[in-house]
Image (cartoon, rainbow, N blue to C red):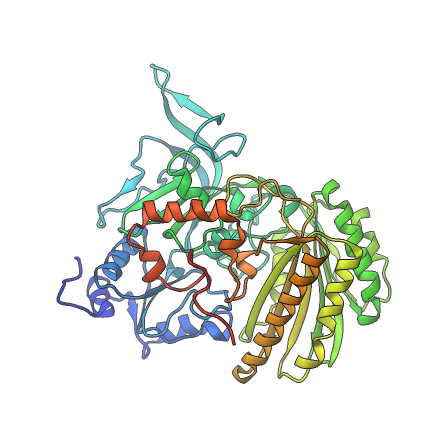
Length: 529
């Protein structure tokens, strides 16, 4: 049943269409949804929350929001610290958490419709997983394919894709890894169980396997997406490849992804964990990280989180090094510059499986706090890494008395650069450092100070790397602050492609104006104080 033109209240209209699936402030389901956002800033007060159960539901919701010219936000995992990205005051929040199914199996493509306009129809269970080029290319031509079957005339009829994981748009990576735990397979995804699948993949995605598999979005074979007109389409290497590319890094600018079909890979045990050190070891840690970056190209199995943080609870700086090697090799040579550093305060290095290490990373997160991420990227040298640390260290006095402060400077390697996404990194140096400022605190009155200090610091870091000739324009969307512009950081060619895709699939700009949160094609929608 479509919303009537006389009914200008989107929540009332949705309530009439979806009995029992719309919640208000007085309802327990509303409060549970709001309180489940990871960071305090995201716990806003929408007029109502609607809980779709299917792509058809999402289609009808989009049509209603569009017809009534209402505002809405889309919530997947709810892990972002950016206030309006997945929730919106006095508007409709579309909570996808009920669409969290995870299915592993062989699926077949072609012969099924790739565009569904009937909002009352259900989508086929094996709906339209695409042709998968054996070389993982996403262009319209020059692709070779595996597992094709043909009819008598020799024309392609179907593709059998074994061990494809179909994941609902509201699932978390915890849902994914639990499904795969006993299979000997992994999908490339987030390093935390509460991270949403949708936000991570449409923003790029960093994993333990970044040296082998690139960004997590590079391992998606199909996305089922609700477009601005409410139609349900599949985007993949053959069907709508321009949209497919745009969705891999273009965030929420083109549609609501209701299902991801993911590659899986055989994966045994890993060696990994965290080692904590006192602040006196910082000079050795920086040298060890530079050594790691020099060797990273030759060892794709190694991933590192090099974190130096000021902890207000202890009034001190600590070093936490996360080391993950995607083979069961104890203390591989690439990590030995770190493991040899003494003294060590704690050490959890061990052989384990993927979900074991994901759970460990999750346990180190400060849920129910306030938070901000900021990031920049540069080519590493010993001098610039030391300079960035010095700039960070000089700011600790200005934040040390903030209640609950945890103020981290984190160095990581950038993922292997693969073609076929929107990130604009093709041809870039693949020995880049992703530098993250990750800050949490407990009280809203500290927001202005944290925001001011961190913004000034990231700008100083950019100035230093530019002066050294080491700066990269790229900003990783999932670690970007509200004032940063990751879409433009992909470069003018990529941004122009994204704008063209938006014009083709959303000519009225529904996802630019009616879904106002997040990083838009026009640039930052808001800034921090």
